[in-house]
Length: 65
Image 1 (cartoon, rainbow, N blue to C red):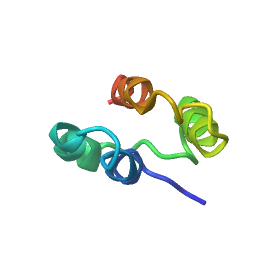
Image 2 (image 1 turned 30 degrees about the vertical axis):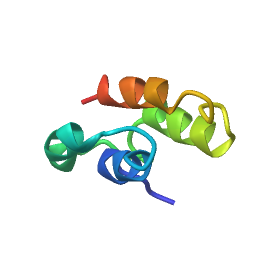
Image 3 (image 1 turned 45 degrees about the horizontal axis):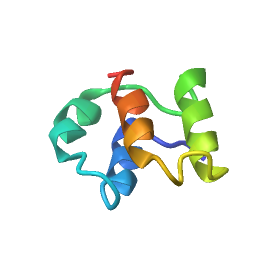
Image 4 (image 1 turned 90 degrees about the horizontal axis):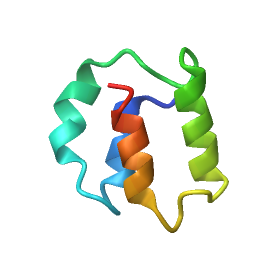
């Protein structure tokens, strides 16, 4: 599975308003195959680590942009 920052932010947008990051994320080349930090964040989300704090996940993801 190859997840991009844009696709992750689009998913998180149903919890936290992420639209302001979409354009920058669209231009980003970062994905789960080429960035271990981002891959870890996606795995943490899948594992439920950010269920109570999706805002923190958005903050961590957007810091990669």
